[in-house]
Every structure is written in structure tokens, then in C-alpha cells.
Amino acid sequence: MVVVTAHNMSSSEAEDEPATPTATRPQHPLPLLPQQFPEVVALNVGGVPFATRLSTLRRHEDTMLWAMFSGRHYIPTDAEGRFFIDRDGTYFGDVLNFLRSGDLPPRERVRSVYKEAQYYSIGPLLESLEELQPLKGEKVRQAFLGLMPYYKDHLERIVEIAKLRAVQRKARFAKLKVCVFKEEMPVTPYECPLFNSLRFERGGDGGGDGGGGGPLFEHHCEVDVSFGPWEAVADVYDLLHCIVTDLSARGIAVDHQCIGVCDKHLVNHYYCKRPIYEFKITWW
View 1 (spheres, rainbow, N blue to C red):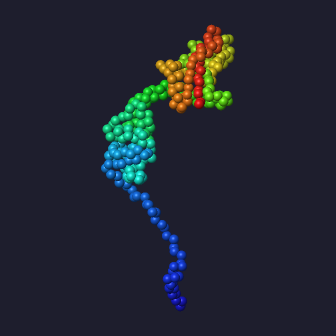
View 2 (view 1 turned 90 degrees about the vertical axis):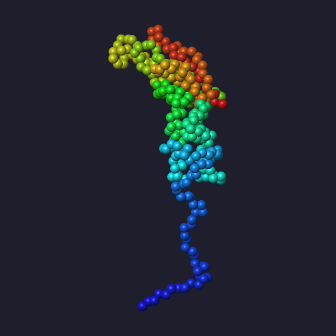
View 3 (view 1 turned 60 degrees about the vertical axis):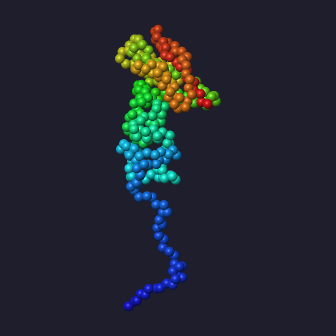
């Protein structure tokens, strides 16, 4: 029979024996959820201090603020113990004022507060702001621009042409010709163009394309970009205002002036007569 005896180690041998590695605890463990909030909440929004009631932050459900202060998410605190939100706090006061008493910002702050309302997903504030100027007017403007599906493409074309010409000529500005027309020529029948072409049937001997009509006559104005036609009360000057507004919103300095009309002879006694504008884009 084999007898197994335990080996008693001396204290010196025990010190030489390597220790078995064990899991180390973090020095600063994360707090357990749910997180508790006081009735009066001190906030630090991007370095701007605020104080409000917890009930104000939870005024509307299905918002980011309600979710943040529901206790289901951990919110860090700054050195002063204020709950920190990593967002520009410039317009957060306007958001709080709406949550407190339904107050809306002045017109010059509407767009900026609207962006904050989008970030915090505050539906009632978004709906209220959309009924104010300039957002309400922007909705009407976009409805008008929706009549021209190629509007944004044409706008990009203006920018690209102006940039290319300025780089090629190493100039501070660039000029280009833009045609803006609301209605087509009173020559029938015709097909509405996509860009700056005009195609209609010219009377003849019945040959050519389709349906016993004459050959198709196609006209291209000698311009860089062409807008139109459209069916709305808004006129050419309204569209010009939209073009300049959208370019200016991108930080592009633009001037324009009418330099005449397209005098291309079409057929019989018809001439094009579309107005042509010179756009000057200044880059620096």
C-alpha cells in the first residue's frame, strides 16, 4: 500500500513560491444602475452651467433628455458634481424655457434652437418651431423648388464650373452665364427640356420623327446652366433669390445681373428670348 504524505513547506519556501494570479478589481468601478438624480439637477452643458427640476427634464417622454434622466443610463459628472452633457450649451437655455413654460425663442434663434430640438428629439418643440419664421417660409420655398427636380444638380454645376474656371485662370473670381425662364416659347407642340434645350416640331412635309409631323428642331441656349420652366406663381426673380440664398448659405459670395436675352432664331419669326444672367462667384 502506498501512503501519500503531505509535504510541509517552510516559511522561506512559501515566500519563494510564485503567487497564483488573481483578478484585480478596478480602482474606480462604474456606479450601478439605475442612477439616482436629485429633485434639483445641476447641469454642465458643454461648459455652460444650468440648474432645473428633474421633472422639467422629464417633461416629455420619447425624448433624449427623458431617456438620459430616466435612470437607465449613466451620466458622468464634472469636478463640481454637475451632470455633464457633451453638447454646445449656447441654446440649451431656450430648450429649457420651452420645457418649463412653453416659451419659444426669438426669430433670430429659431434655426439654431431647431437643431438642438432635433438632437434632443423634442417633438413638441420641433412642431412649434416649424410654425414660426423663418422655418415656415422655408417650407413654402422648398415646395416651390420641388417643382424643379434638377435644382440641386444645377446649383452644384454652378459651383463646379466657377471653381474650375477660377483655378484654371488663377483668378479671385469666375463668371458664368445662367438662363432662368419660367415659361417656354409659345411654339406648339414642344417638349419641356431637362437642361437648356428646346425641342419642337417644325412644320414640313410630314417626314421626320413620329406621327406625321415635321422633323424635330432642337435649340440649346449658349449658357452654362439653365433653370426652367416651372408652373407656379413665383417668377424668375423668386428663383434667382433662391439661387443666391442657397449659394450664400454655403459661404459663397455671388453677384448677378441680367445681360440680355438669347436671340437665337428658331423657326419662322420665332426667336428664343430667354433671359440670360451673368453670375460672378468670388472665392477669396
